[in-house]
Length: 428
View 1 (cartoon, rainbow, N blue to C red):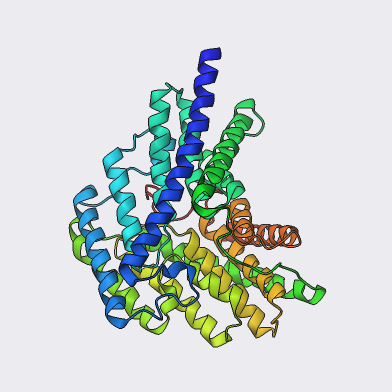
View 2: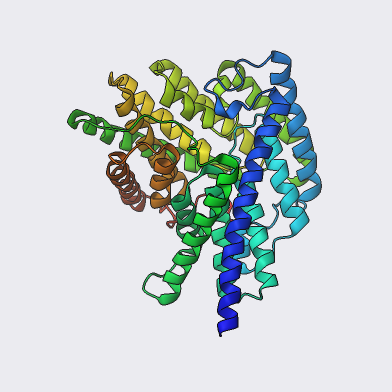
């Protein structure tokens, strides 16, 4: 019994450390790919690829997409399908294949770093889960604990990349593990997820030096502003519902494997065309959130950005490219919040920040079917102060409750908490 417990503790600690190292290296690799493609790590800017010379704006996305498309053409099952996902490994015990998982993750980093409109967070989640699988085998971990380790490692990979320890644990618990808190085992799963996520985040400080992803003003809200926050909740929940349906449909219509060598480059070309008008849409959405937190933007420009980002992400998904949807959803919600703030004449940076964070959390909660994760993810990314915590949490929960109530009167489109729409086997 003591030996088994010690093996479990060792596996948990090493999984946390390994996930942090993977997340840190993945972030460095992402910046390196962006620099090679465009001459600068564009994600940290507020202009995207707007200042990049035109030949690179056309060449980089096509070259990156050709590399990724050819990789997925050889890698994925035929006639259609995806590689074993973390969710499949957790739910059914299917093993992640090391070479396949790593190559798929690298292809995702290449296609996103070269300008496609998808998130890069899926790659470290996959590789962290793969590391947890290896450690579970080495320490002879039982099946139930192995499941918790893999799910927690996936959340920890997210936590290490974005410096969000609480959100990383909630990602594992709310979207994958879904523990029964009336049992001792359920609380044990919570403990495993929290420890692994915190260890992973702290380990990644070796690379990111504990810097927040976004530099946000301290978020505040006035009594009048609270009324506009409610408008943001309603609008962003509606936008999130529409995005969930749209993105889910695109996942179901992924081209057959034999066509990926040309559909993925065509999709990147489509994103590039959109980026000619709105260069901020490239990448995972970090550019857009940087922009709306840093500068006042005209309502017409915000509306164009919103349509452009959703359109570019739709094109990328339809082409068969793989990547995350967390940060694209987050950026769309941030645009909704900024758009309503601009339309209402609110220009105080602290109040705009509050509406941006609320919008981001509400859209993400609906697209991912995970309100607690979405609210905490938005708060940890921005670190916008203690005033924002109760407001954002209440706003996101309110939006989620309204979405569920309306959905139940329809055809049950809300599904279950913790299950995002689309192909359940999707590796993201």
